[in-house]
Length: 521
Image (cartoon, rainbow, N blue to C red; front, side, top):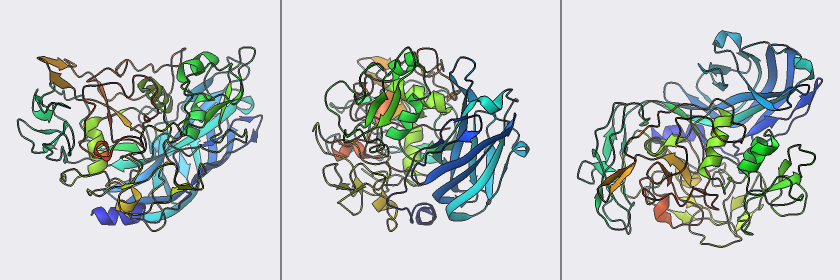
């Protein structure tokens, strides 16, 4: 099963074709411009009337295995009324599948909340997919012909409902996964077999550093455990994707989602004030003037020729940044249980395994690259377990291109893919997840798990923050945990079951050069 899924999903990936994001840039009075983004293209966008949007979509390396596993593109739309507030607002779509259409063997899967649709294959197949899509809006838009419209797409992978295990049997925090989940008072991996509540202390783990047994609060039925199926972003948020997000925000919102004032000079790094770029390419293209928002772009090498670095995984994302981005896209954060399922799949765990399914790892670092900073960036290292980790605290190094390890000839173990075909779940940038909590000093943190999997609604508050009140308000210890390792830290943190930061929020309270993330729905 594992091999069959991988061969059909990612065995033919191009070096240059791994992408997280595509968009059709705004149009005014019927003139539509487009920007391609690696292998996901959304082009020829039009609004033929006041309640439909049409476009052509194309993406490579798509697959569909009926009843098992497939990839899809999450499509959502923003619109700007130039005669009104000038803000970019989320556009709701009809939740009735019959209201939408697609050619080219594509199927439109609606969302009950109308915040977007999934576009996927409708029969077993794999390869490049192309079709024309017509989507019906939830309500007509008066004045549609003089509005600006943007259509966005994020590649996702379906993780089906079913049993899976958390923890890998690790019992030595020095060489094995730190604080790995276990069953009751043992190191035996725990099986998740439903979304039913898990009693307090059932999941056993070792506290980082001292080996003492720690336990969690009760995990309520509403807390997503990963048993139910979900879509997971195929790649981490890219730097180009975060730029596209910033360029739809108001001036005040931009100020919350970047590290420097939007009025700063053109070419100023936007996400860090530390003076260390660490391969973050996001810069101010045009500063804010007269109260208008700034325009952001990607410029990895600082030559003011924009576009380079956009395909790299986005670092310097705090938990508040991640929440805002996921709320804006109408996705949500994943829990750490969902993270392990997205990596490991439905098969049992292996001691000290990495997300690509074995215990072999090969270092890839950003000072040894071919086509540095481009959409075809790859490491000079090639082999089983290729992973961006262990580069150390160099100010010049940083994350690599999203999906950098996959080529035309790689299988799962060489491409850094999870069981389902999700890329870079180990290394590159930290994955920020909702924690099951911990116990130390006679206190459980948090005392109650309140996260219930509520989805983002496509809008932010006026200050640029997430407005989903059921999501953790900030990255407090025991509430949010980073998983999966990063380009800087040792390979141990890239192990699927490693929970080294179970009792610390140091990696995502503020913007850190190692931290990124992705979302699910």
